[in-house]
Image (cartoon, rainbow, N blue to C red):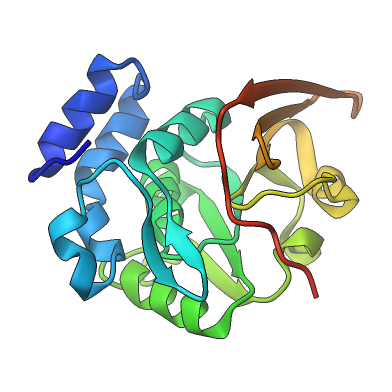
Amino acid sequence: MFFKKKEELINYLIRNNILKTENIINAFLKIDRKDFVRPENLFEAYADYPLPIGNGQTISQPWTVAFMLELLQPQEGIKILDVGFGSGWTTALLAQIVSDKGKVYGIEIFPEIFEFGKNNIEKYNFFKKNIVKLKLGDGSKGWKEYSPFDRILVNASTDEIPSNLIEQLNTNGIMIIPDKEGINQIFKDNDGNIEKRYYYGFKFVPLLSQ
């Protein structure tokens, strides 16, 4: 689907029952996808499909991002790890939701993509407000220094869920992590037990490790 306006895209996602939660809808309204695409793709900023950002990476389809955030259920004031932040769009959406009461930690493995995403996030005030902290590195290892995380969002597929990320997920936490065919929604209860739900029909670039 191709839309010329941000509001048209968001209304489409709401009508299709993909965007449902008020704080996520508000984040989509305030964090503009056009700020996270390459200049040559600006005319496609509100299209409901992935766009290239270099190094074989993409900014994900809005439908997919909305679906993942609804599964993740980010809240104001919590701490979130964003693995493979790429264009920076998901990091900014999450930062908008957690507000200055929370924190978003983003990891990206490609130096050029890291700079691209960082520059995009800088279009907003999240660094000045100390909401977002970024790291160049291997996202599959997580970021132990700042763990545990209340939510973990992984933006690339992996055949095996990294044990580091499971360990760094807080109790009563949620992690969203894709594989080659769909998305895993992982819950960790008070006792550290893991429950998984699975949603078929999604494709992602692979999660790279060093």
